[in-house]
Length: 137
Image (cartoon, rainbow, N blue to C red):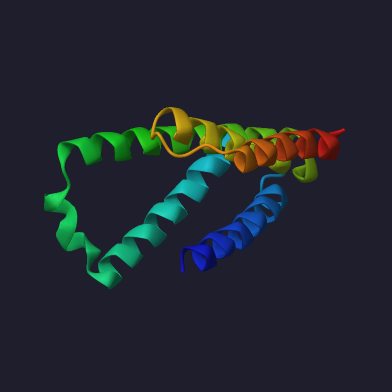
């Protein structure tokens, strides 16, 4: 089931990039990021309340709070940089470079989370990296 959600995420992310590129024209990239963020926050809280997940807020550990907050900061910084890049560059070039996060995530998962690293992952990382640079040249 995780694969279905991951695939849907990639579909929505593709639309996000195209819609953002269309909407950011003539708009300050930081303002555009803030507007997008408000929409995401509202949507997320509607889902939280609709599914009853809000009852679990008091059960979140301090450690989880810390890492969720740090993740939120990283997300915010990522979105600010992404929107600025989209405003300045072509979506067909910005998006592949942004997706180098795949390579960085696999490497960080190995180094920080101690996830397995294999020859297949190394080959995939190299292919994604080379493919990204081929796409943006």
